[in-house]
Length: 83
Image (cartoon, rainbow, N blue to C red; front, side, top):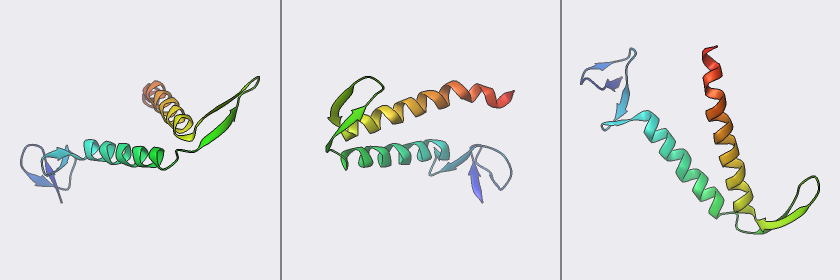
């Protein structure tokens, strides 16, 4: 059973919380912590080849850029779910 934000307990719909914190925020926090941990575990330099040029950068920069591009794409496409 999950606690609903109005103080009652129910297995039905409503805002779910753990220790007064919405589970959505807990999930986002866990993903951010894991992403930062993964980024700092990959500090080696790599060659990144684009169509016309190649750059050398730390792997964490490439991973962070990919993470941000994915987040931006998800944010842009979230409105399409309602259609």
